[in-house]
Image 1: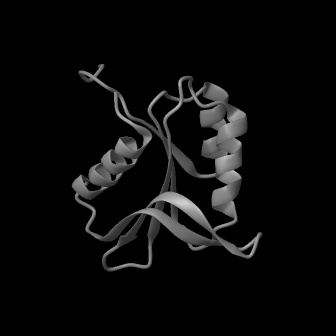
Image 2: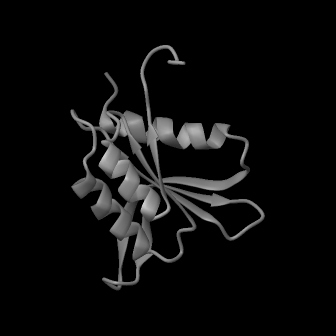
Length: 120
């Protein structure tokens, strides 16, 4: 079983392997939150090469699928961080359908890490 820290490292590695040239991949980076006027922790932050894009991912390792309340809270956190241009939530347990719908409304991608063979 992967620890929560292992999951963060795997997410960083997967982003690096996507072929999108990353300038810097940082785990546990502080990003400016305009609403609270503070820097807040984001699990994975990727600065892309050749553009001003900042890719962010919040990573969750829960026993159950992420519900709409948790996902909505993360979406609102991302909204308050205007420097982030690409928003993602990564879960090792999946998402409920209402959670995915809410994330889509806020332009946040829901990604699930699965263990074992690919399902078709």
